[in-house]
Image 1 (cartoon, rainbow, N blue to C red):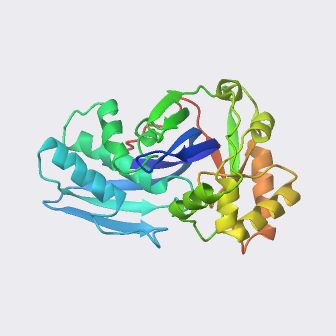
Image 2: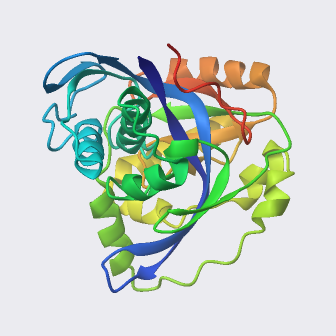
Length: 295
């Protein structure tokens, strides 16, 4: 069995003060994009994990890699032996704010739930996914949604228009914990204004770019000043507002026209070749993401 584990973009992210359980309440519009890791599952009497692709900095240990942890968790819940060889091909960068590890864990839950014939519902898998990370429940259905709480409360947000994004992916990631710690330490932090998510679901790229913001952007730039410099340079070069996905380090801009996106990617990749990779992706609308299990 082979399954895709899509990356996501945060089209806006509001972060609220730390809760008593040490987590932050968030409110974020998350969308799946056409950038994905691939998990291939093969029969084996033991549980094994092999990494290929863009896997520098990714743990191959079953107990720490989120795909391996998902397999162990699912087997424990079902009272069965965890077995099978998971071959994980990485494309989504580590520490890029695109949810790659969480998506890998969710994909493993989906694939093994089918392979082991466990018949868990999507709702049950979402509950299990939360144990893997705050982003992980989103990836069970991988559909455009406003996510609240830690990220586990999802409200599907229909996306009217076909949209694309140009991603600017630096070679260095940022640790999410450091960004949140800096967020908590900001002396002049103010409550974020409300965002009319429903209206944005009907909007085109120009309006989305203008109205979304990310409460973790400034903390991310404080942790990694070079990222703020890259954002400013890209903003000046493209003439478009450049955003941070999640806690960084991936930057992006939303566009309506795939031709314009390709042209922007080509022009910026020449000037920014030593500072970031440039990738054009499609933003998938609700229920539009292709079949996850591809064979």
